[in-house]
Figure 1: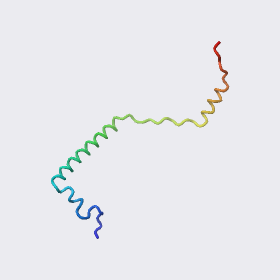
Figure 2: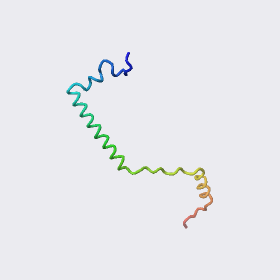
Figure 3: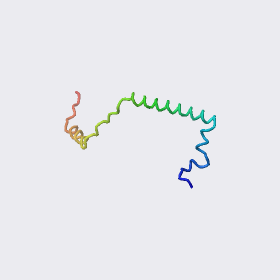
Figure 4: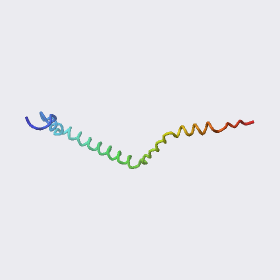
Length: 77
């Protein structure tokens, strides 16, 4: 056996793009892929960089709760 991949058996990959219609399809697919690639590059370059929010400090919630508990409630008269 040859050391080629199984895709190459029976001439499947070589025959795919040797027919005239297949050549047209290959050309159209390449053009579409090129357009998709360019559109993706433009969209990536125009996007603003994503800035991650800093992670909350551990124990910050407890300090807020303790401070809120110490404050006396002011009731409007």
